Length: 398
Image (tube, rainbow, N blue to C red; front, top):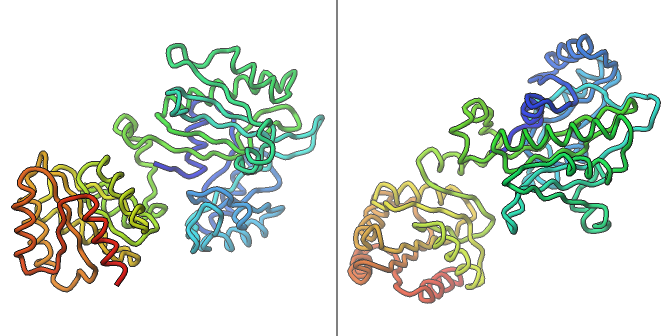
């Protein structure tokens, strides 16, 4: 589950991480009041207005701006709230901004120059260990740094049996070129950041930039946080941070009815039982020369009601030109699934306007094929994987 920047900062602060302080506003007038409140709390004279959406690159799209007085706070907040912000990480149409973060200015002048760093904590799936990835090139897209100056990216792997060690935090601060008070502050920052990552059951904490201020404080200026959905039962307060307006509406609806659905960019809808078979089915579609429109796992029960719900979810995507149903009859018998498909098709009437290809394999697969073939419905049946691929290709080549 993704959270907004201000929510990620709340999590960080609860573990002792120093953050760029701020308050959330839902409209321009509220933004002015929050700016006044922030000035009273921090003494900041300027305010940073930051769009709150689940996407990076907000500054490039005009979603992060500096206000030097309260009139500018109102003007800029009014411009950003309600806009469809387009960044490299949003859909082509962008994402609607519903709220902004009014943040303090932390780039104030002082005895030393400010410096920006990149720091993230995530799982190295290849080695089964958490790792801290960091760079002196903060404020930039880490993908650009990796492509053009990979030697400036460092990693520190964490042994799960002992956790983050003090020498590792010191090594990070050293590699970032820090010394004196800034060095000590970075060591504390890294330790608290890792505790936040572990304590919140996150899959990623990305802080870009981490700022060394002119008076040698280390501050999280941004926070991109992904939480593990499967661990949210342990964190009721974090589960409440979910903002469904930022999520794909079809995926939200599917989740509410118990379907595992991920929206994709292709034209062939998939309805499968089992995640492994779903992945193989998507490979099958690509092998046939097309792209899957979704990942959809209906689970072990595929009765008429569940199949009909899955049909309606898939058909909400206007790009779907055909639907491939691929069911392995292990837990559930193929003939029951076939009857469910036929009943669902009858119930939906003219709502289904795309070819349906059904491939059933396992218990009573041949009986299932006969049920479909004799149903009188315009449903194509298959038993073999390749046969299903060929029928998808034929249906979409007409």
